[in-house]
Image (cartoon, rainbow, N blue to C red; front, side):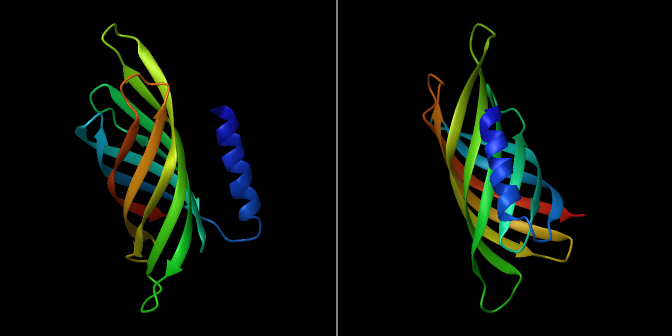
Length: 157
């Protein structure tokens, strides 16, 4: 996992070497399908973005036996023709998922996948984000994937 984090940080640094970065904090609500059950969670997110790229670290609150931490890199794939405030993005996600079993032990699995969504800039310091994610999960007994929608609000500082 440490190698993946270092790789993502290196890629982000190279891709954005000469562009202005805007750091942000956000709050995200997820409605996800985990093992056939709907799980609603709240997450905190920290990241940086520029005109074309966004990198983020997201930690979700614990839902039942599961908790998820993800790293995401998104690329703006289309700017709105009518307004510069609306953008469509696609990106990749990697993460770690913890699962508490019946014996009280914590198992760790890993996820990888993608996300798509819309960003709308409410002001120079706020944006609204709605998206969909899919993560393929490994190393957990009953979890094959996590998928669902998200709604987020980010504050740029």
